[in-house]
Length: 113
Image (cartoon, rainbow, N blue to C red; front, top):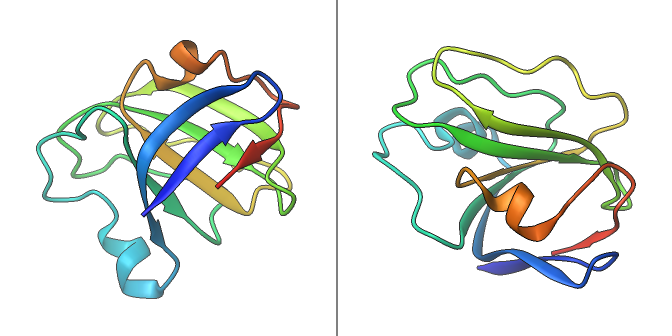
């Protein structure tokens, strides 16, 4: 487990982040889950877009480049929707709705995880 911190704003996005970096772990993602617990997150890599097909709850999604700089934020992505391709993104961080606003994360911020 890892912690995701926003170094630019000195805030925390998640306390318990799990990495999904293999084909099967990325394919499964958060499917078959009813919700994310507060402070929980999934880090998908490599990943530059996500879909919510089969999901049962909304998510906040942060896309980062190879240096972990935020390139796009998507607030409250609902089930059955998908994001557009996030240019230069290597990581997609899936978190509970409200995590982006609570941490004040914006494109250009530098993260650590």
